[in-house]
Image (cartoon, rainbow over the protein chains, first blue to last red):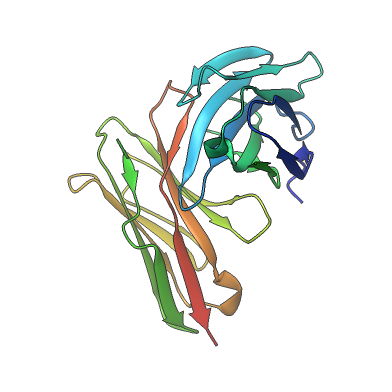
Length: 114
Length: 112
């Protein structure tokens, strides 16, 4: 158990809908990262927050947004969903944004868009 | 543009032998590299890392080698055990960018 929790575990929704994925980092960790893993793809970095502020952005679509709240949990919002958004979404946390501290991953949320 | 590549989608090795997983990168500005292991239905877990100032880092049965001139790194597992069967991802980052680029993974199967 990495100490990172993600809810829900599974989500099935229709095209055009909007969903929110939630992540609670390990106790004490200030950085949260979001990744997308599509079929046969590696982990695509989406976005990184540190202590409530956006630190880095990757290949995140404009239809997607994220935020980190004062209690350090983070939410990833996906809107106008398309079939191609079906994927595993992982959240990871680390103590600081730097390379000194490894990332701990949650178990992921499997999103299926029908 | 895939900056981190793992060209072997799968690898099978006999128990007790050496497993060698390879990873190539294209961005010469990357200065920190990591390997993660992933079991089904779980998130990736950190295995070992290496800074670009080193060419080797060892942790028990796991050793990572970095060849900067070839932009290549490899993970050696000796001896391989059935419990090592998993998908292995390599990742790279550049200081100050606060993001990690992952490869597509190599599925290792260790045969008993």
